Image 1: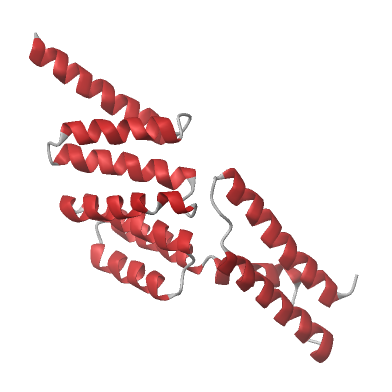
Image 2: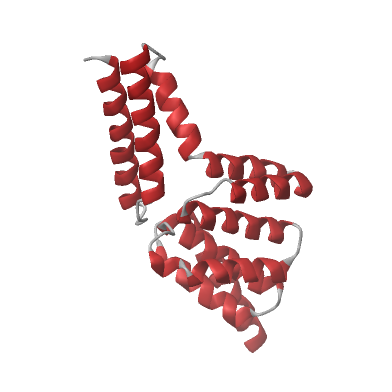
Length: 204
């Protein structure tokens, strides 16, 4: 197999595999993601065919991955700083990720993680606003089941911190409905049990 053809195979296989994973996550495959991956693949294939440029196929795959996943990789790095309470650095990286033209799914993931960062710094109202904005777009098919469950769970936590227990219970139940086998569902079930215990204790 010639190198230009191999590059094409790698690129299209990457799109197909990621598309399959998106279906498993109940997430729509982003057209922008697919077009970016195909465009990069065609460029490398063309360079290999017309100029003799011969990078290693693994490097080509790595380049496609870095470009198409740029926003999510920056979010992971921002989360690293947020977990260490270096919120200014985290905010800078979240904002850079927003400017890198993320696909619709990537934009929601950035917003979700910013909401979690707001919770970490006790900016509860901002967190609630961020999570509600995400859930308003959940029906468009760009929010995977993992991230939808995470959004409901974190929104429930935010409501608890505001002593809005009824809204929190609604969100924790939504986690169980969205992805009952997830870690978020386990945490939500624990939170619901704690709420029931508090109610029973007050009743006694």
